[in-house]
Length: 257
Ligand code: SAH
Image 1 (cartoon, rainbow, N blue to C red):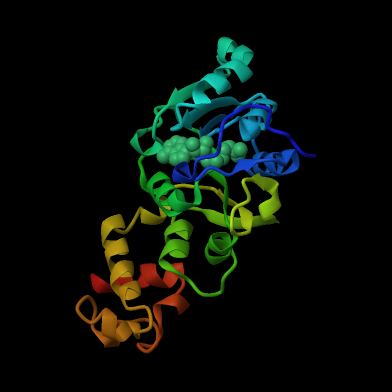
Image 2 (tube, rainbow, N blue to C red):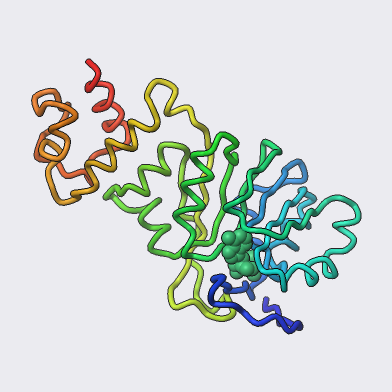
């Protein structure tokens, strides 16, 4: 199904605007988020409301934060009845300055790709975490987080908080204007801070940053100031991309023994 934009809002490169044109993809993002009428959803960058419309049709409450002031009056007109009924709240602003005060909530969005890493990281690390995330991201990013056998700083940072899943590939033609890359729907389920119940979050990431700062180097070498080689639970010549999340935790615990 195609949706022809009938407004005069020009897509702005500076805001990473690639509006969804496919209703099917909007529905797939919502369904990956398992959104129901009981949910409160935070949507980043509603734009012209393609995804917002599908979110609202589930009966969920939606808080939509949009930075582009030109989109705001459009959203107010388009969703007047939902705003009146209190099902939708539209906030003009930068999501990076916004802290949700309502929990639990789900984060569902088609965001600008240049802030993907920052969005995922800040929302997983904050006190008020979403319970589920469903996002359109660059295909390679979704693969690196959810499909690759090799770990990265990003994949481990996601897995420490939840279970990432590559939902489906999305062709560039599902957006207008077309992005230069293919996309994918990435979901992150069961989000919590439980992994850090018995270890220090900051210290854990300092260790990862140290190891991945020199990705091609063996961990015995990069971590030598943190843990003596003979204490490592795995071969000292292992590279950081081949170390699993649970082994990283084991290493951190051994540092203190
Ligand atoms: N969700 C819409 C629009 C996607 S384009 C759709 O799928 O069709 C990305 C949207 O994010 C744009 O509307 C852009 O203005 C908005 N945006 C960009 N940076 C933002 C930020 N920091 N905070 C909130 N919204 C932002």
